[in-house]
Length: 211
Image (tube, rainbow, N blue to C red):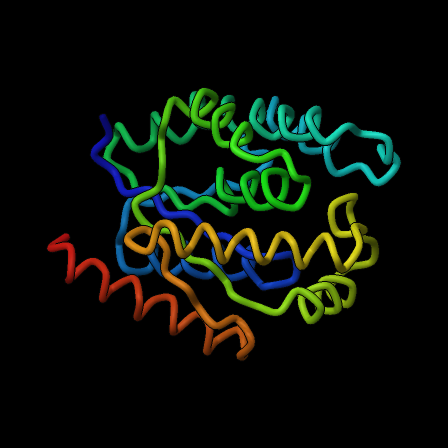
């Protein structure tokens, strides 16, 4: 059982998810919230080593099942070593990506189906966030944004547009299945406009839940 609040950010590549997760975390700190930040894959020394392996563009021959298991292994370490202890200490945890990424990317886009959720339920000990912000952006625009934002793409970003469209459709299915957890945010605006929309949605959610 945990007493803290677990909040995740999800979205297709180039949606601004990582930027918005960091802005949101910084604003929580400014408000005096006892919050911590992490990312996936990664967040612990072991998980960061797995991240390097997963995202290395030279690993073109990685089997989809191996990919899914590596993500789950990275997540298991992060939950055990960082997320669960922080929640037990009453902290708000902000995480850039979580299980929904695996369901969208490996479950839907890679075609691995429900097995992805099963291995992640095991790896995370069933821990799910209370709030998930989904940064909603057309995948074609997202890929263009991602390419312009940094020098080189990682292995996942180098996938085809068809793959990224399948990821996006997967996210829409997850949002539809869990509307009580997901908060869908239009990510097509400016960084500040999106950040304001997220904070407004967050405060509205807290009031509605009596938190």
